[in-house]
Length: 213
Image (cartoon, rainbow, N blue to C red; front, side):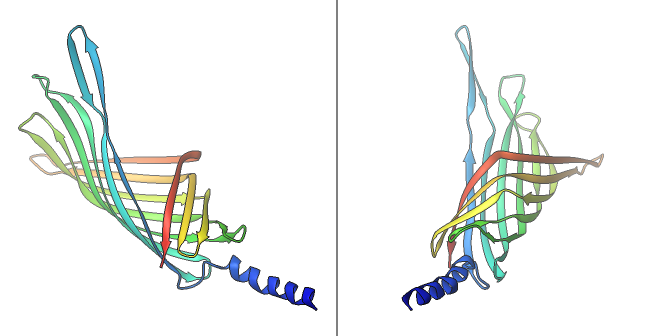
């Protein structure tokens, strides 16, 4: 009798554990990045320092399970990037800058692989607006508007949930498409568009954290 009761208990409990990502579950997450550096070169007694790329980004995220195992999420982000753009005639460093505000809705599906482990493929859409600028010299800067559109498919993605309110995510590559369009107004209106498509496996590996409410 005890064995029958134990077997019944396991049968009833395992599906509940496997479906832990249930309808109306909510979480908060996000990312924060800051990166910078420089390059130094020496020629005789002269030392030249060239600034590298400076990047800053912040993007809080909120997620909600509309049905069991199906999550929709929304991220609001801001990013700022500064790139070296050579030097003027007096040796002063010049820069290019871009800043973008983005809204990123997404969807993710949870496939149970164990009691606390899921395979979580997902899709994200991003739309952003901002601006870009380029130093002509220390007194003159050329400015233009910037719009951004992107698509991202995460096929290698997992989540481990060691506790009720805590999740650890892992992503390793995927398929992404990004389009940037810059436009400037003046005596001559100009527009330029750049498109970038990338597919990677086991590169750009990222680890993230979630707090379930």
